[in-house]
Length: 134
Image (tube, rainbow, N blue to C red):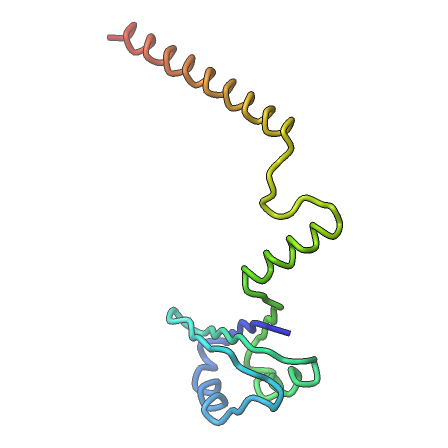
């Protein structure tokens, strides 16, 4: 499973976090894809793969009490879109970004035409008001 950790800490704990991180080694079974530091301060992002929580748990233990971890399951966008489209095909649902039905499209088109006419009238009314006041 692909996960992203957003790790934050208090400014007063920066030296402690730096010391922990310098000597830190990720547990076996955790494949780190990449790490980033927020240049505005006190936040780090880590993307990694792990099989289960048994690998994840030891990775955070040294930082408990100093850092806050927000762990989010993530997926590359193209892979997600493909999975969503496959699911839609299997279930018969409209997929992400699928074209709307003809009736829905025509209704939206009619609403757009009505809005355009209203805008024209408002612009015309505004122009007439400007002429009257000068």
